[in-house]
Length: 139
Length: 116
Image (cartoon, rainbow over all chains, first blue to last red; front, side, top):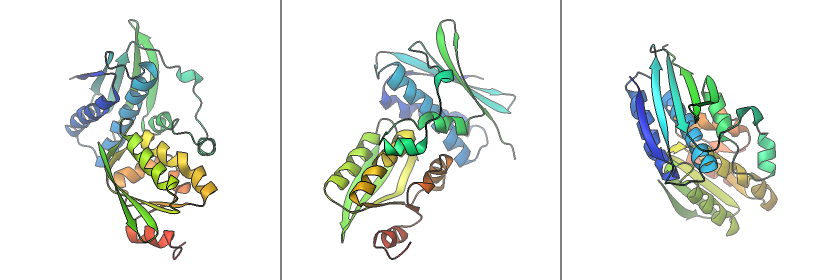
């Protein structure tokens, strides 16, 4: 079963997105810490998309889709038609440099990369799709 | 949504953070820390016992002031992180860059120089 949420490109929507993801995750057994981290990864991608691809324009929207693959993997798709993100041009920032330059941003994708098993950005039917995969730990 | 209460105890400024700090609400944490620093406080404690969620926007706020604290001689400590929140700090290794302790008592001892 696919779970789907349409959201406006406003930072205020992030709370609703987190509640939606949390509710879906709660229907499958998972530790609080793992659920929190998965919610966080989706939140980070959505926040980047709202701020950088859509400049917080609440008239624009995107979708978050959640699918379980054989109860072994959760697959998230974040779908929009804004400016595409080029993951191949991204290099992980150096923490000491972030501190030195007093920057507030740059940590989101680092977190997503540590939490998720796979991150992909691609185009489908002229839409940008960000796919996040997480294997479910059954131990 | 986040609520931040300011408390003064002796020469310490305490910021009690309750709720969620995300890309939407991190501005409130940012303002509270900036005000605390610019008011000349040299001992700042952030009590996160009631912090249920933090995203990179909130972590970034803490990181962005570390250099200022060093320049101004401010002692800064975070305490009371819930386990799930603490894990997020650890994912990036921030516990090595920021003073984080378990309890308020430990945080006060750190600020008063009675504990390493």
